[in-house]
Amino acid sequence: MIVQFRPQRPFGRRAFLVGALSVSSASLLAACGGGGGGAAAPTAAAGPATAAPVTKPATAPPAQAAPASTATPATVASTSAPGTALTKDTAPSVPNAAAAKQFAAAKLTYYGDAVGAGADFDKAAATRFTQDTGISVTVVPGAQNSTDRFSTYQRLFQGQSADVDVLMIDVIWPGALAPHLLDLAPRLSNEAKQHYSTIIENNTIDGKLVGMPWFGDFGLLYYRTDLLQKYGLSAPPKTWDELEQQAQKIMDGEKAANPTFTGFVFQGNAYEGLTCDALELIASSGGGTIIDQSNKVTVNNPQAVAILNKLRGWVGTISPRGVTGYQEEDSRNAFQGGNAAFMRNWPYAYALGNAAESPVKGKFDAAPLPAQPGSTPVGTVGGSQLGVSRYSKNQDAAIEFVRYLSSPEVETWRAVVGSFVPTISSVADNPDVLKVMPFLKTAAGVERVARPSRQTGEKYNEASTAFFQGVNQILNGQDAAQVLPQTQQRIERLVR
Ligand code: GLC
Image (cartoon, rainbow, N blue to C red; front, side, top):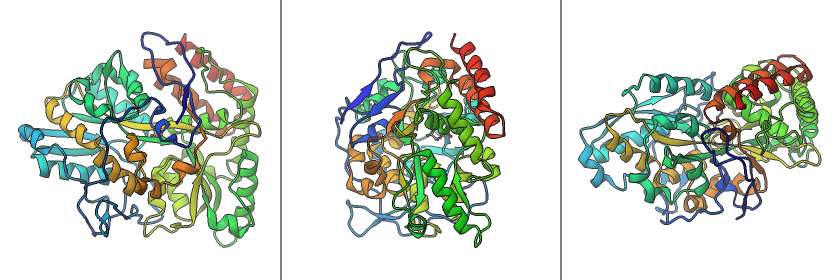
């Protein structure tokens, strides 16, 4: 596996180590959670999950909009125990339970996942952790919207609140939140060696490891295999123009029977998700990565104007008018309900779409996102880490919980059942994982682009807000040629 870093000049007080990066081999997993894994040297072999067999069917995941189905994550046979199955309701046992028991009196509060079935996985893991260690855990599913979640964390940290011990940390936040997070290296440095080194670098601020990698993310194009076939389309679109044409063709055919059917759903709401989607569109059109390698703001350029105006043209045509308010779950509900031909989303939607009750089970696949002719397909790097608050009164117990959640056992369980992309190479190589996430191979060669969190440091959230607000205005009808110069200026003021 070769992962190429483009050297970048540190900005401001902190050097953010993960910038734009490209992956040029089949093993793209390394890039999914904030960086590539070319230099990763796992020291511990991760065996398959040790989860106890469970046959109880899972319940419906929480969803923001009315879900189109009562989807359950896939139930997949585990190689470790042939004939048994993993489900999201039963987490693997705690490998180091004996050591953790000394903190049994502690009561932890954990701000966990809220998207898809994330909260169900968190609850199952917390239940098992308490059972094995005696440490109790209250799971608080945070906001689904990453921008809102960031505000919540800022509030909690500003008040030096002891109300939260463990937190899910977006890949773009270590720089901004580092002052409030515990250095995990003294207790978890051996475990950290199992994870891709570039994500560890992303999470290391001023020499402190402020987050343990938990799962990776990157943008994918979901498409309906049955509908492509029905309309004589031999392959998913490779260019954005082809996406438009295919979406229109399928919509035209399907609308009569299903008036709510739409061509393409994505994350158009004014929040962090739109930054990810718009970055993919611009970078795959030769329009750069918002801020370039020499920290120059580049967002206002002819290619960016052209592709964002094209996107504007899709609102109310191949995409629903309401897409300007869509987040991940709105998109997934439309696609999984059988009401969209194409969707831009993260890997978590794969397992949910293939769940027993999903209307699109077995009728879709995921491919690299399209690119303009002459440009390479791009996927924005996303993902989550686990951090411990400096203001926690239960730091020892919190570290044990993070050790468990980021263990090879839990990552394997979450990957196989929930298609959460592992951050540990030995887990990523597990055949069970590759079986449920074929796109890990088929989307190899896609260029991974990082959001400019390294260049903007503590001001990333403000820079991203300037960007997604501008793009959302364009989606709502304004000309990109008018909006992007202002966006450029707003961001320039922040990085100056
Ligand atoms: C996913 C990604 C995260 C990103 C967010 C945007 O959760 O993992 O990195 O910021 O989506 O909505």
